[in-house]
Image (cartoon, rainbow over the protein chains, first blue to last red):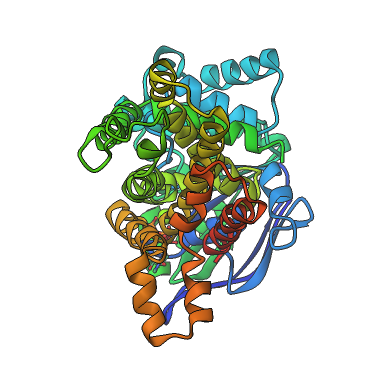
Length: 237
Length: 241
Ligand SMILES: Nc1ncnc2c1ncn2[C@@H]1O[C@H](COP(=O)(O)OP(=O)(O)OP(=O)(O)O)[C@@H](O)[C@H]1O
Ligand SMILES: [Mg+2]
């Protein structure tokens, strides 16, 4: 579903992403790990068509993002890092706007979509609050809701559980796992246990390069008995 | 292109979600009306039932007021990161540019049309030429669009609203000054008259003047519209860079 080949992005003389290749099939949840500045967000931005790669290609559902960016964007649900949203809009107004631009123009259909994601992400109690007055975790949920509104076949989530309380973290993980059967999901995270809990595959990148691409159990088997963060440290330093 | 509608709606209503819109509209009306009644405007002493003295200041007023509307168009999205959300929704850059521009233009049009009580005052005092009033409004709205095109472009160049405002102001000021007779005379002193003419032809004042005299010259309309088209094209280029 999502296919990335030799992606490169340089800023000045710094290789933010340096030749990354992988594919994610439907039913897979790919966990994207790596230290700060490794190039996780930059890779996601290239897949979603927000920034143009210096080399390499990204395709979603067979469509090259460089050839038909809108075609790719239609199939993607994207939660950017730190979940940007228009602060002066209420949660409901914002989600209605996203629904409209995602092609749900019929009032009843639009309302159904908005209600559905409000329920999924437990936002109903703050629906009339402006986004700037929400707490960090609630803002994050608005970003998540926005990415799910059109039930996309591919999801790209940049730190989806960042800022959520333990209950909500669990809730979001369950939600992702339940949806994943017919979707291709990429999510980045700094929580190693999260990868073990929900991901079917894990890619670790450091300085823009892939240093591990395997199942979570294979990752653990690298150093039997060691903690995950020790394995992570050994791979990325 | 059907994607422009939701973008337009969000952006236009966005002006009214904060006090900015109301502050702007009230300030615009207060300043424009008081300029007309000032000793520079001579609204009463002019002794004619027309809005000429009211619209006389529009090129100058727009120079400050349109950048205030335009500076946030893209800078704000870049600063808050929502541009990443917007440009990963299924819209082309052109649709996003048009949706935002048209919303800003509609807002400016609203501001200009809110001065209509001035026209009614004139009608109450005398017998104005409604043709001239209509053409002047048309000219003012077209001119506002051209100013806004420039401001939208400069705001796409930076995430800093202050820089965006100052860049727009500088660009707009250039386009106003080009038409001043003192400026043209200076130009003519070191440029061939033909070239000086071409340069002063880019001034907003020159093109707006005809509208205030009741002349709707297709050349003036084309000037403003092509300036809008050109700046929006550059706006798309700047965002896709
Ligand atoms: N616009 C930019 N200009 C210059 N350098 C940039 C730019 N965007 C990203 N970088 C650099 O690219 C590298 C990768 O950044 P990226 O945001 O992809 O990291 P990340 O893996 O998402 O990190 P984090 O875990 O902190 O979110 C960093 O070194 C960053 O400084
Ligand atoms: Mg990141």
